[in-house]
Amino acid sequence: MKLLVYVVVLLTCTGTCFSANDRLLVNMTIVRSAADIGAYCLDGSLPAYHIHRGFGAGARNWLLQFEGGGWCNDIESCAARAQTRRGSTRFMNKLETFSGILSNNASRNPDFYNWNRVKIRYCDGGSFAGDATHDDGKLVLYFRGQRIWQAIIEDLLPKGLSHANKALLSGCSAGGLASYLHCNNFTNYLPNTTAVKCLGDAGFFLDSPDITKNHTQRTFFQQLVTLQGIEKNLDESCTSSISDPKQCIFPQYLLKYITSPFFILNSAYDVYQFHHILVPPSADLRGHWNRCKLDPKACLPAQLHILQGFRVEMLTALRSFLFNSTRGGVFINSCFSHCQSESQDTWFAPDSPQIHNETIAESVGDWYFGRNVSKKIDCPYPCDTTCHNLIGTGSTNDLSQINS
Ligand SMILES: *[C@@H]1O[C@H](CO)[C@@H](O)[C@H](O)[C@H]1NC(C)=O
Ligand SMILES: *[C@@H]1O[C@H](CO)[C@@H](O)[C@H](O)[C@H]1NC(C)=O
Ligand SMILES: *[C@@H]1O[C@H](CO)[C@@H](O)[C@H](O)[C@H]1NC(C)=O
Ligand SMILES: *[C@@H]1O[C@H](CO)[C@@H](O)[C@H](O)[C@H]1NC(C)=O
Ligand SMILES: *[C@@H]1O[C@H](CO)[C@@H](O)[C@H](O)[C@H]1NC(C)=O
Ligand SMILES: *[C@@H]1O[C@H](CO)[C@@H](O)[C@H](O)[C@H]1NC(C)=O
Ligand SMILES: *[C@@H]1O[C@H](CO)[C@@H](O)[C@H](O)[C@H]1NC(C)=O
Ligand SMILES: *[C@@H]1O[C@H](CO)[C@@H](O)[C@H](O)[C@H]1NC(C)=O
Image 1 (cartoon, rainbow, N blue to C red):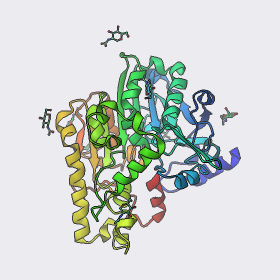
Image 2 (cartoon, protein in one colour):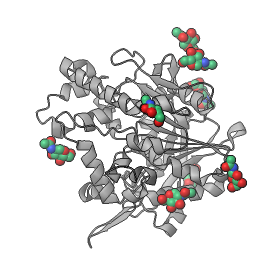
Image 3 (spheres, rainbow, N blue to C red):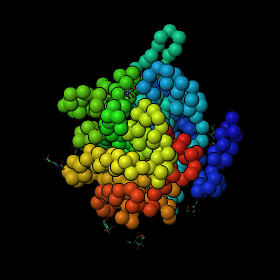
Image 4 (tube, rainbow, N blue to C red):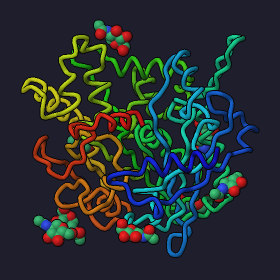
């Protein structure tokens, strides 16, 4: 089994990947103590993380990265997920590749390579925020994301996290959302002498209607929050000052209550949001958008106009953060991508995406270490020639990354 996993990892490394022998593969740590507080994956298996120790000047710094992978918002989809690597550590690869922000190579990850780096595996389907159980006599499903988060933090604290000099909570997609949701809680676990900051990559999911004016994403999140018992774990300052507390799962409403410095990394044409929020299948039954979804160059002028409108909505939702947050960072590029911090080619490589001549790794580093103000907004599509678009590359294979 272990050998099989290893072979699969090596085989998937083709094209732009680095050669197999200089990839960093990190072993899984199962959190046994999680059982004590009922912190289970959807199927009842124990949660896990992967840790690679820091060294040298980074030995007392900690980066925690939430894995992403969508959500499940009803019993059917959660039951299906419980049988996959998204809902059970039993089905996960035990060796995880650490690249991009998780790389240990200074040439590929100049600011965080020597930190303690932890990848937190995602198996609850609720951005690490649920707390409920489904038991209908035939099927048991555990919605215990909040407890998983707590169990993992409490496991890491005695391993050195409690004495961190610097800390960064990060994550991508559903894990990016988790980073918004848990930033304050993370800060509270650490001494006030630790410099704590948070980064949300591709997690700025907009509360925006689809092209038929249906609030598809709002409905989806409301079902998710209800099913998984998330509402009680949302930020109290937010839930007590909004008419529908469930809305506090949206970063745009939660943002002003996050007290630690936050970096928002997102594409203005985030492919997940394009395909699931702006033009979900239910809003395009006749498939008018199919070609445009596969290749932005095939979009009709009217479709591009709608995409530009989505970008403006995102910038509008960010306005107050952009102008008023003195300690925040922003990198909103105009690429058809989703998750740019964990893959080496988008994080830091000779041809990585840039805004004003700066890569994502440089911007995040400038912000974290206070070297420079990092608030970068790209010009609208198609001006940016540095993009690594997930779509329009002729490889539909890349689309499988959209959900991760
Ligand atoms: C570190 O990354 C550089 C640039 O990609 C590469 O040339 C070098 O071989 C890597 N070093 C190790 C030890 O993997
Ligand atoms: C991975 O961890 C398991 C369990 O802790 C251990 O038995 C195994 O030897 C480790 N494998 C590697 C390659 O480090
Ligand atoms: C983090 O959040 C959990 C759940 O709301 C809570 O029980 C815990 O006390 C919080 N931890 C800290 C240090 O605030
Ligand atoms: C930090 O915490 C210590 C002990 O908990 C407390 O004495 C001190 O006043 C705190 N400092 C600040 C700046 O909050
Ligand atoms: C509106 O969105 C909901 C949730 O995705 C979906 O179930 C419903 O079919 C949509 N209605 C229309 C008219 O598209
Ligand atoms: C910045 O904050 C001030 C005071 O809260 C507010 O009046 C102003 O509208 C904010 N600016 C933006 C662009 O949101
Ligand atoms: C962009 O950055 C590179 C390397 O940091 C530098 O050599 C080059 O002069 C910069 N170009 C511009 C237009 O600023
Ligand atoms: C800081 O950022 C500005 C604007 O992006 C840039 O012109 C300047 O060169 C940067 N300074 C340093 C020291 O990197």
